[in-house]
Image (spheres, rainbow over the protein chains, first blue to last red):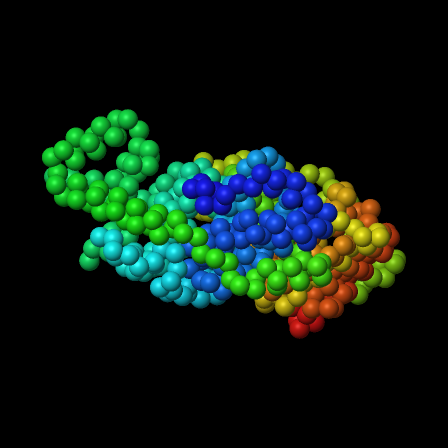
Length: 179
Length: 267
């Protein structure tokens, strides 16, 4: 992933090959190495622990098939991050259609309390109020460190469109947090 | 004085501005306390968000046990494709839209071996093997361009010469289109909200759970010995060797495709 929150695993390629062959032990090793990062990214994007856990299930149960498209030797963590973001974004779209709202969860990563000049609770709430297309770009760019090109690939939009959404996200955050 | 937008200030640190833009922003900042304050705010928000994000949240206890249990009983989730260039998706949508002529066709009649309807369907299915014409890509402004519709593309390999595609609890607006193609596997394309359905697979079988709306396009391999399309446990299309039975009474044909009503309660 862009910010390296999913750490690389030297043998990921080999483990993935074994997962494709049905090895639950190999899947377990990948899970232990990457589950926290997958869950954290899913939680940041969806804002819901239930959705994030569903994403966690989907990503790891999807690995045997998805592994067939893995072509990035040595960059498994980055690939897994993109897969996770894609699954989480699809879940967000589905939730939007069902008119569900993310839970405001004060213990989510962005909402951790601290003595910062910027009130993190206020920041988390402002992020939660962003329209999901803007929030997704903000999380992926400003927190996860993806490039606009990578985000465009995940969301099915252009890099320029991603940059525009980020600009709108900042504008709305400013409005929410300074009024 | 014209101030600099928050978005532009945010792009300043993220290498999102070209050199002339950076120069203009720097000159403005030198003389504008208000924009300097806003830039400081942007940096503080970014720092706070990243600082909070450096501590991963632990995956829920018990999640691995649940995943392992599902994995061991063969529960596989099919993930969406990673990257889909928007222009390509637009061309594909246009190609699909090009093959749309509704013509009523009784499903029961199609099941009769010598039925003219069945003969017509067989001709239509053969015709679809020719590649559909592709519309040229459009050159819309980035923000004005409509985002590509979500699409999930899945392939189902026959098991012992048979393929079953089951749709469970579809929404009332889901449309299922069926055609035949020369591919070795069944191709499933779910678009719109149907792309967000849950997909579960087993050898020779794909289950699409709760597609809410949108379309599910199924391309069955011409060479497969047996293929069944079910909706809520009811067989809608059965292909056996060269014989095709369309059992869904509400089925119609659309050009080279068969259009099925998704809701089993409709028949």
